[in-house]
Length: 160
Image (cartoon, rainbow, N blue to C red; front, side, top):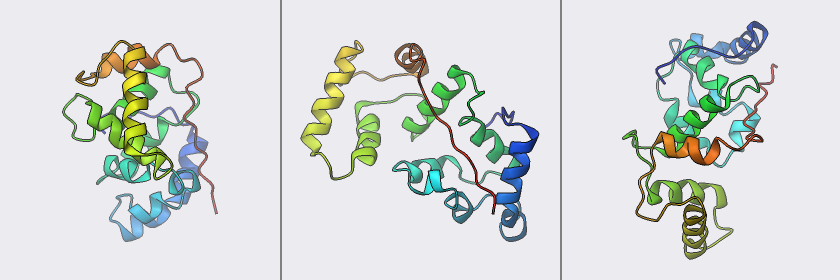
């Protein structure tokens, strides 16, 4: 993830550390998939597999920085950057129609058809001033999501 600064309080970090204490014993200091999926908010999240790919080989400090994106104290810009990384699964700095369709597929599952997903996504892009052929970069995400004052990404990490 690169940046390891955290918007979590010391108390938050200690809660996470307690929750992930097995990582140091069993994973050599790296957060394991099983540890991540013990957080109920992540375990039931339809994007959990995508989030897991973002967590690949993170140590505890990097994991805390990752969780910071879900803090209510994090600036909107940092949340948008996180969302962009979630969509940019190949890490090329661009999000295509197919990247967005993959996320939409993860979110909707079998509830809507592929044709309906494509129609919805095409309409959303057009309303934002883009087309199916547009390749969105981070500044596009900032433009689209930056005006959203109600963007919520909050997770509580329970301690046993």
